[in-house]
Length: 386
Image 1 (cartoon, rainbow, N blue to C red):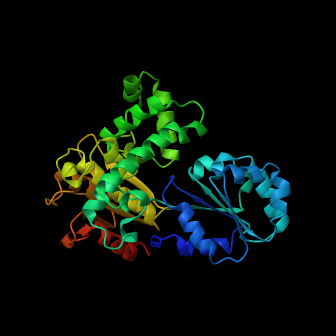
Image 2: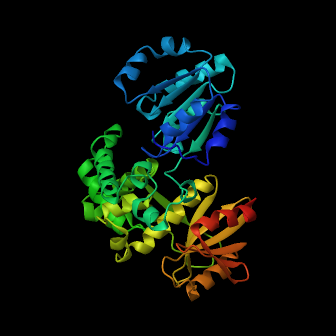
């Protein structure tokens, strides 16, 4: 049996099950939601687990009200809830009748925003919690080179060799395009694959929807719609610009990232760390790794980027607990900041600035500016944002 690896969400999920009638765990397919939840369910004596991708479990819900009423008193876990959105009104009715916390634990491979479209009736009754693929600090002993190459999806980073990891990621992409995509109307696998590969080449750049649409022979509106789907299913991440000084001529388009470095590499057909170090996308892949970990550590934080037409720029700005943190990602051994970085910091006036590198060492660059490793960044941020 494979060793279970602790996730940082565990204690928060236990607390929410004691307080909220419905707890939702969202996140991309295969990121470990089911494994985490089954681990948590071991502490509960009276539980029911339904996986809506299993025909036998779907059959149990042929008469959902009759079946679920018979489970009163149990913690009912429903996996892949987005496949049966008509359950949400019934869940609302049942939790209002049962009047207790910990009635339902629902899992979905769609974002909170997408699920909300079907679960408006659960307002005030549901706690949303996002699970990401593995964060670096959740993988004891993992080499940063492996994490950069394979990403954080469990079956990729924990594969017994790099060949199997790469094959799993290629299979994951194919499955998403050829099966999972069928849940959503109006999308074609061929166009989505082309777009996804284009976005991998544009990783970390501002997105021009009109240009993308023209390349794909679709409208700018439809290109945006496709990217919104990828974002809603956690395959891409859009970072909006930060507006701190309205007198500046700011870049207004969002930056787009492939949400997992392993998937970005697979889309670019990068098979090894050696291949990655010689590829022009390595800087953007490193940015996507830093962004993914920031999202996992601080899911409630706002994350932006800053860029002006005059060349002032910084990769990420994190706003949380009333504080502003600037982060610049440097994948090479050269960690000095550019004039554009310093101009951006003058505009933003952050509480602290971090230069994040894959290196294992950290040191102060100047007052309120530190060079840090990704592992060290989490502990530095906790001290500032607590």
